[in-house]
Amino acid sequence: MDKDEITFVRPAELTRNAPYAYAAVVDSHRMIFTAGACPLDRDGRVVSEGDVIAQAAQVMANLTATLSASGASLSDVVKTTVYVASSRREELVSVWNVVRSAFGDHDAPSTLLGVSVLGYDGQLVEVEAVAAVRAADRE
Image (cartoon, rainbow, N blue to C red):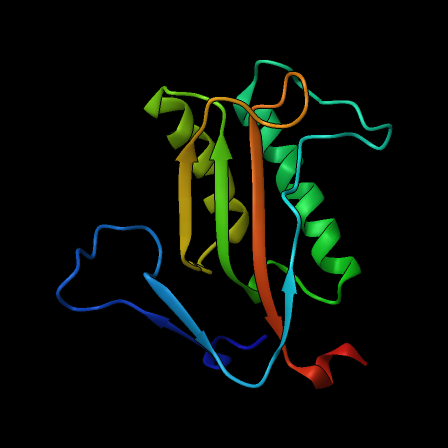
């Protein structure tokens, strides 16, 4: 999706220090809602147990594959939620840096959460996304 088809909202009365937009407005697009991308390899095994950075990289690769199979890309994402099974802020920030790097300058709104546990044994990271693609882009 072209950047001018998404309006990222950054209210003047809110801090400019947040590394993301506060909201995204999309009109007349096909919406894609992903399940949480997990740090699983092709055989369904959790990769890199104990390593949030390596798991985040696998999660972003898996999210990119899911979006591609749905006719979208990271530049079509209008919202993400990032889950990190940790109470350590530095681990949340490390994961966020991997996620943010994957998106480049596409600063869609996001929520970053520290949670107590995720679905797979050894899983530390999960990212879900909402994307919007013009209906004509499907062809």
